Image 1 (tube, rainbow, N blue to C red):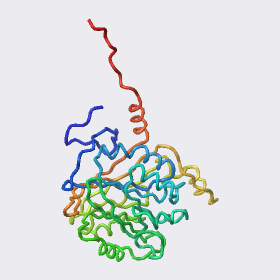
Image 2 (tube, one colour; image 1 turned 90 degrees about the horizontal axis):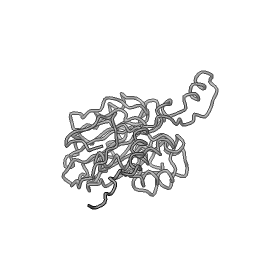
Image 3 (spheres, rainbow, N blue to C red; image 1 turned 45 degrees about the vertical axis):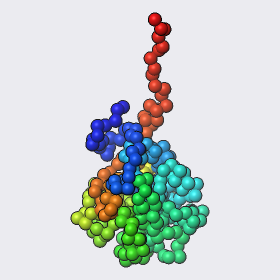
Image 4 (tube, rainbow, N blue to C red; image 1 turned 135 degrees about the vertical axis):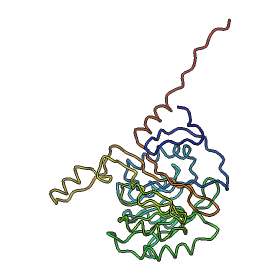
Amino acid sequence: MPPLPAGCRETADDFRLIRFPHSQRGLDTAVKVLLIGDIVGKPGKKLVLRALRELRMREQIDLVVANAENAAGGSGLTPKIYRELIAAGVDCITMGDHIYRRREIDEVLQTEPNIVKPANFPDQAPGRNWTTVTAANGREVAVFSLLGRLFMRPVDCPWTRADQVLKEIPDDVPIRLLDFHAEATSEKQLMGRYLDGRVSAVLGTHTHVATADETILPGGTAFQSDVGMTGPFYSIIGRDIQRVTYTTLTFRPTFFQVAKEDVRIGATLVEIDPETGRATGIRRIVVRQSEVEAFEQAESTPALTSPKQDAV
């Protein structure tokens, strides 16, 4: 399949994994940052491992951030999965309310520089409140996450903690991304308005359902209530439909297994002016497992060559 003409784009729902060369993007070009929505279990993780290399090339992405709080069996993160995601091309990992479901992740949270806890957790909780990571074009990007309070576990005020984090981030790092892990869309919208002009993007996670409200606010902050889920869409927010239905109808407890079918990556791409930190574009991206499989099959098929002819 030939590449698209210059300036043309596919729609978010038409991802065909076209192979684009990775151009030499300089410090003065817009920084493209991708946030991958909640990775759910093995299906979500495996699709990220298979698709991310081509996705980065296709979109010429400079930095990939992924929410991985549900990557281990649907709840929590393990050191092994952390290393797999980083090796696959994820530059920074954010977490959420399930951050400590796997005790073995504590050492990673305390020693690795490219993973953050929700900044409004207690200071004694393992992990960094924010971090900076270097994008592919050499620009530094600050990343932090916060937990909402509506319908969530008790945490410190996300608004005052956001102010505190922004005071700590150096002024010479204007590109700043917040993963706001919250339940209520109203609370997420309030955070977007509260930080408009002070961060490059406020992107929501946690509900596993992508919202269609992506926009750039008046102050230059890209916003979306929720970027969605990376995992099986034939499910109830990633879990086996029959298990959830059974428990809902009978009140009998059961283990909600991670579903397996119709796996997709849900993500949002933000383009940011490197000098001002203001967003210049925002777009939802969907990658389906079936499309990745079709690409892999085409890539593994030997190219047809014309038979050699005898010299006359």
